[in-house]
Length: 346
Image (cartoon, rainbow, N blue to C red; front, side):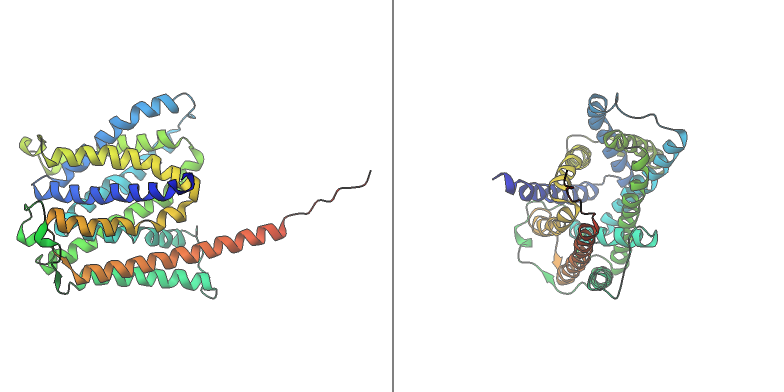
């Protein structure tokens, strides 16, 4: 049973993300300001992570220079604050299903950004390089399908939804084309900001290896940044009140479960099975979200969303396959070039 634990954990991780898409969409549909939502989410995440940071890393953390602090500040702004604010706007224009579908672009976008920064390489003449190129093209094709092709609605599950608070124009099958395309673009922009965050933090973490303190500090800085933005956009005190409703549930859930719990679980999975194994589980969130959004939120799932999501998943696996082939080839070369030591007779 112990060998199957990573498989169970990745299902839990993707289920947590699927619930995040659903609860965030429900909170926005109940009138919550997305900028205020981001502030509360990051503030709760900071409160949740701070005790663990003090207990595990406060005494062992290396001193932080002012330049490192500035880099973390701007990294938090572009990778977390800006990414989440843009994501919230895009989610208002679209649906939870689209949010889950575009998440499959993240590994491909991250690879493309790493390619531009010369962290990754792309050798088109090799099978692995061609697979990665096909995956990038597939990602673009899937995103274009999601944005420009809706197709007929699939109402197999929509008649049995549990919550009926969505406005008709917010349903996937009835959203205005201009708003839907804008939402798709914003989702991809949000994933691009997050992908850039994943790439750039690798450089910072080398000089400041205290991962938990690094994460907590980013959440703290992001909560300050998101508060300034939210206060500038919305000053009505009524909009800042949460109450005992889905808005409070969404904020607490995203702050604790998404930022806190999944951080540990993802680190554990990467340690046990590697980052490729974790990335390959990403489509599970899309599958869970499709069924949950139809049955719980009553969203109308269109054929275009299913086809676009499928193309995105195929593109993702193509890139991951090419990446894994390159890693296997590199490992083989390293073994062959390793020096061979012979015992000398005494």
